[in-house]
Image (cartoon, rainbow, N blue to C red; front, side):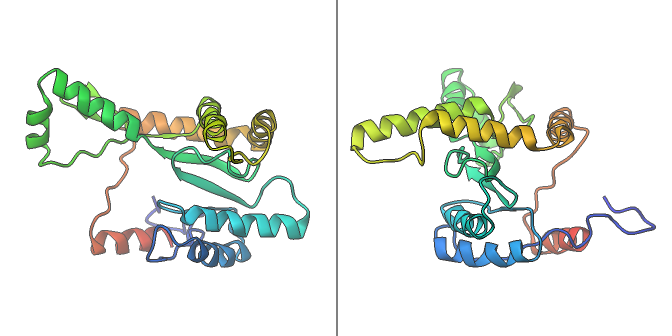
Length: 224
């Protein structure tokens, strides 16, 4: 974090706001557009359809500037959202509910579910490198091209079932644009991401669990 002497290079570079909602797309747009106006490279919302409002802000800027690829970018959340606007979504922070269901089922089958629930007072946070009952159980991940393929196939299936367009463009074009965008990001960015993930998994980096007003204020002072 910040050294005891001197200033942090990232001081004042993290912008934040509250919308009071996870689902109001308009508020997502209204929150994101000024941030891009202040020079934000990417905007990341915490959860829900709010990101579709961020996407509207990004697309509006892209149309004004004649861009077919970011920056500006946004970062998907919950599921792999990279397919929504290929070329303008850096990646998605995926909350793997599928893994959570699998792990709960596994613990039940091996007879450890009740004990694990009691030991953790009913709350399990599945992050990167998480161990539960001596078993590795990870619940979040950064989207990959393999994840993109999986969600594209879901979109294709949804179109077959509903008869409505779901994907914004042909599947091969989606994959091509995402691959092109990722290849244009400096390699050190992806290397740093891999390094950070490895250090979290091995315990060299501890991701703070910020749950109190005091902790929130402390981290704002550090970052902002």
